[in-house]
Length: 428
Image 1 (tube, rainbow, N blue to C red):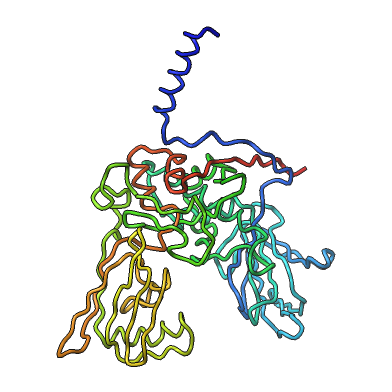
Image 2 (cartoon, rainbow, N blue to C red):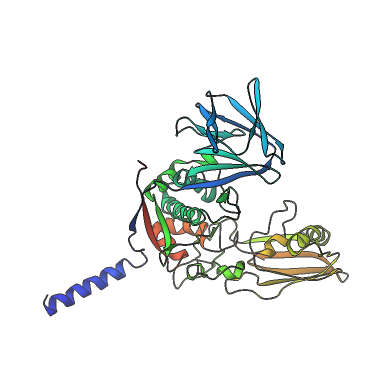
C-alpha cells in the first residue's frame, strides 16, 4: 500500500468512526450446544393449595420416578393440597379421584406448546411443585426466550412501533439479568422470583406483539463486560442521572454501573433528560405528622431492626447526597431517639401515605413545617421512580424516540459494556 493511499484509508476510517460514534461493537458469536438456556422462576412460596390446568392434555410426573405419572385431558383441573411439612406430601385431586403424592412433582403439556395454568394464569414450559416456605414452592421451568415474553411488556409497558428500539434494549437487559442468575440464586430450587425483587413475570397474559418482535430480533443477545455477562439492573425513571451501584446498595462496584447523565452531552439533566416525559420525572409527597409517625412506627423497625421505637417526630433532615442527587443519609429525630437510614433504604422507610408504597425514589429534598414548635407536616420533593441503577426505562424510550438504536441505548446506560450473541443450537 502506498503512503498516500494509506493516509486516505486512515482518514476514511477516522471519518467512519466519528459517523458511527455511539454505536456498540458488532456482537460476537458463541455456540451453546444444549439449546436455549432454561430458567427456573418462583411463582409462589409457602402455598397450601394450588390448581393446575391446561388447554391441552398435560402430564403429572415425579422427577425421582418418571414411571410414576398420569395424563389429564384438556380442560381438566388438578388441585394439589399441602398435607404436612413432616413428610413433604400433597393430596392430588382430579375429578372424583384423589391420592397422596410426595414432592416434588412436575406438570407439563404433552405438547411442548401447551401452557400450564397456575390458579388460572397460564405459563409456558412446565411447572414444578417442591417443598418450601412452610408449604409448596410453585416454580415455572421455561426457556429464557419464552420467559422474556412474559417479562418485557410487564417491565417496560405495552408500547407502540416508535419505541421498538427501547423494547429491544429492555429485552437484552432482561435476558442478561436472567442468564446471569442461572444457578446463582440463594435457593437451589429456583433462579429468579416473578416480582420486582428480580423481574416482573406474568406468563402468557403479558405477551405483546411488539415485545415478541423485539425478543426475536435480539435473540440470544446479551450485554457483557470483560467476557462476562453484566448485572443488568434497570429501573423506571432516573430523574436526569442514573446512580452508581454503591450509591444505592452495599454491593461491589462495577464500571458499567456508574452514574451517567440521562441526556446528550452538553445538555441539561432536567430540561433535556431523556426520561423527562415520565409522569414520575418530578413529584411531591406530603405527610402530616401523625400519618408519618404511624408509617415510621412500622417501617423503621422493619428496616433497622425491632429495637427501633420512634415515637413523636422531632425533625427529619437529609445529611448529604450523592453526585447523582440521591440521598446518602436521612436522619430522623424522634422522641425515641435518632435514626439514620442510608441509600435505597430511605425509600422503604418514607413510605407513601394512603398506599403504603415505597417513596418513588431516593432523589429528593425534605421540607419540615412546624406549628407551635412541633412538626406538623413533612414534604418531599423529588425526581424519578425506582433505584436508579443501570438502564433508565423511560430514558430508553426517550432515546428511541430520538432515533437511537438499542445498541446505543445499552452502551449509554451500561458504559464500557458491549454486546455478545449466544447462538442456540437445536437440541438433537
